[in-house]
Amino acid sequence: MFKPNSVIVYVKDVDTSTEFYTKILGRPPIETYPGFAVFLLNDNFILGLQGADEITPKAPNH
Picture 1 (cartoon, rainbow, N blue to C red):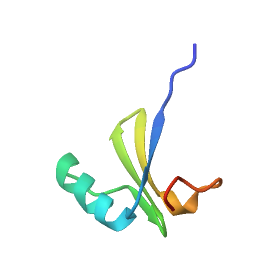
Picture 2: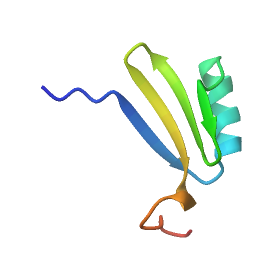
Picture 3: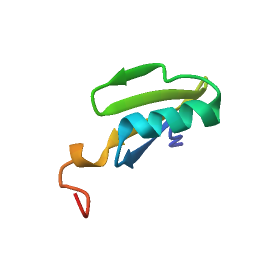
């Protein structure tokens, strides 16, 4: 059975979004890279934030 273990949210500004999720989740990301941040939500699930302008094909309005 397929069990997703992550979700990636494409955001306009990774730094601003990282600050937002750090406050909401009450903990910092476990890893950061230019244009990307990773939060551990529990032992088996992660949240990734990626800059929308970093994806191909480009996101609308970018």
